[in-house]
Length: 157
Image (cartoon, rainbow, N blue to C red; front, side):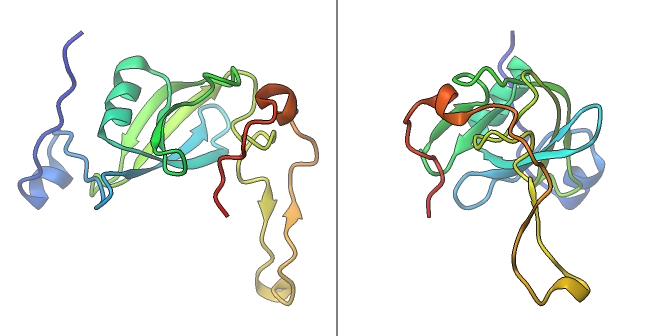
């Protein structure tokens, strides 16, 4: 397998209109990633990749992210078995955001146990007098304590 190489960003035309992959990583070396279910289109999660994670995702065909809280690569599902098998990778017009369309083995993507990391909705419009979140997913797909044990929660407060 040949090494994956990204093109250097040269012109707006090259970035927006050519077939050259020239991703733009931010000042921390990261690019945001939106991950959706391949079949339903449901948003499962939003994460980040560094250059190494994006290259490994492309070559392996499984989602590899960069964990900002742990400061390390994170092969989604390696611990839990909830692997995200990549079915399609897209990049936006500016090449500064990645969209992964995946099949999720085990049916969940959220470390809290829900199918999607977006399991709550925020009231808005005529309902914006309250900021009480509404749970849109009623049941967890798995029990995080059984899967991860007493490992520390990766979310920083």
